[in-house]
Length: 70
Image 1 (cartoon, rainbow, N blue to C red):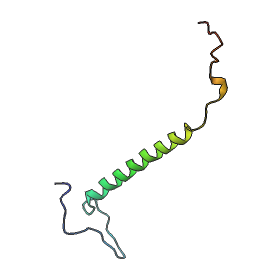
Image 2: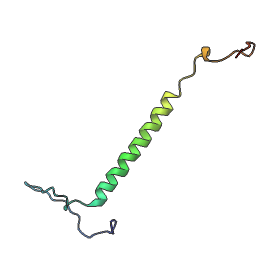
Image 3: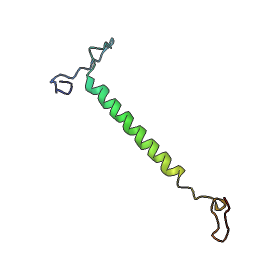
Image 4: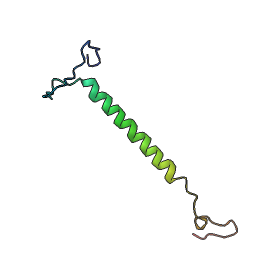
């Protein structure tokens, strides 16, 4: 099981930490992916909210008294 809670936390501190694919906890990569996706969603939502908040220019509207011929 990928999300099985283990009693050991596999982090090595010292002068020569080992970085091996078998030493990392897969939950750490999952959590980093979730945080990255959440940041992407929040950032894009903030960008859309601020870019669409500007009022449209008045030249984009058709005055009702004008007649449009197609």
